[in-house]
Image (cartoon, rainbow, N blue to C red; front, side):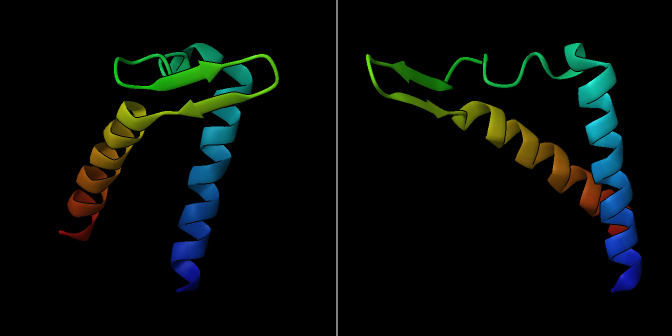
Length: 68
């Protein structure tokens, strides 16, 4: 289990570095068709449905490839 925590920490570190130094890599997130963005006078609601489905598919593929 400790090995998985180390791998998860390394992945989070890489994602954080990519967000910090290369933000254009993730500029698509939240701007896909199907993502809901509602802005009113005092309330803002953002629901990235399509983006999260895409992230889920990519993570599922990666985890299936790593487990084989």
